[in-house]
Length: 514
Ligand code: BES
Ligand code: MN
Ligand code: ZN
Image 1 (tube, rainbow, N blue to C red):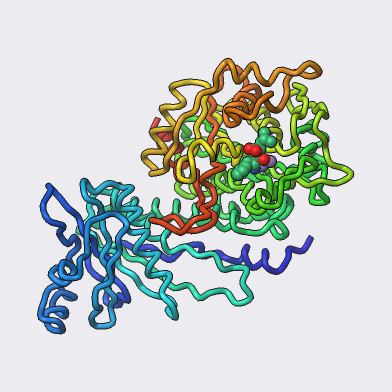
Image 2: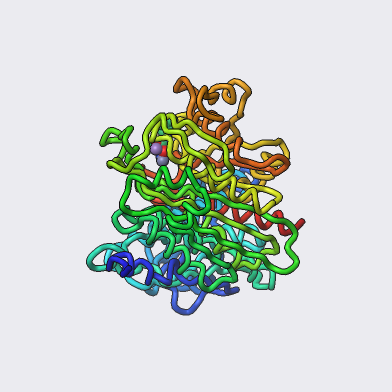
């Protein structure tokens, strides 16, 4: 089927991010330069980042140094502050706060993100060459600066009648070192940021354009340059395979469900990681329909699948030595004469039966099928990502994702990866009491509890039942964090955030190191 024009255009967005370069000096053409302010050893905030030629021009034009001007204009070290100084020789100068204490990767990522966001929001500019000069030589900090720059420069404009011109065309990281390690850090930053921006684009794309069929094709297109085998199971194949959960959830819509299987199997892989993502392209609630106010944001309900597909793209592009088998379970949850109902009993992929509790608890049903399918591949670890419960959002808010696992070792692994990636996760327990809540009198289990309390845990307890014995499993609930309805901050825009991608890539890197 021909793709709708806007989606075709989105598919044609091959440049997800500005170019990213590394240099030991300020490039000749620099339309804007980002410098930093940091407070080191409790001293006064001091300027970080040398630009000798610009400083000379500055002395000539203003009779003072850039550092003195920054201090005079009250530029502080507080993370997230951005101060614009008078420019010189056609170069704009911005000073970003790098934090009051130690300079950390996350501090740098967010500070550079804030700076680039400000540049990208400038009116009537196009194709700017931006330099980021923060005297960073630690590869981890260089990577963080690169990610922050590209993530901060992000904008979503592909569906406007006239696409916004791209404000930032290229970013150069000016670093005292440009050795192989630094170059590898820049390349990794580019690969990761492009994947995050890809995930953001999908989250932001409306459900009349992005539905299971087009989403699956978009996944294939995104992975076509990579050594990843992509297999798309359509509704017929799903019926043949016995995917009772995905079929039930997708049954109400004329846009039929899909399960996308992605396989990356490099030589010398150190471990086998399975990823599973929730891809509900629109969640109306189904027959148990949501009130309009709660339905409004539900195009984002495919963000888990977006994160998983984008992570595979980045892992393969980076050539990480880890085998990854990923599943994106795609369906649209709509009410109609062919919808599934509450009290239906579904036979899931692994043969277990589920008494459906509420058609709005659809995510766990598509995830259960995909998790069980992933288990058949006998991976070492299954990580699922889903915008699963409003309860998780109530518990942890808009900037912290939920983590549930079937073992402490897996929790530690995920929390380490999340920390390295600069994404915030908080572990929630799966208790015996919650497990007892999903007992059914007519089927092997029910898909929901008897009370509304602890809804995130109940969903976790349900998914756990589909993980084969002996396989490590982690469940990431990104309901609160996949879309930012508030103002942009740091490198995080309003709208789709691409949360999860960085943690999954960090996890894969750690597994690849053995
Ligand atoms: N996609 C929603 C989860 C969600 C709700 C995310 C609100 C963000 C904001 C999920 O499919 C859902 O509807 N969950 C229900 C489950 C309930 C019916 C057991 C919920 O959380 O209310
Ligand atoms: Mn729902
Ligand atoms: Zn949902």
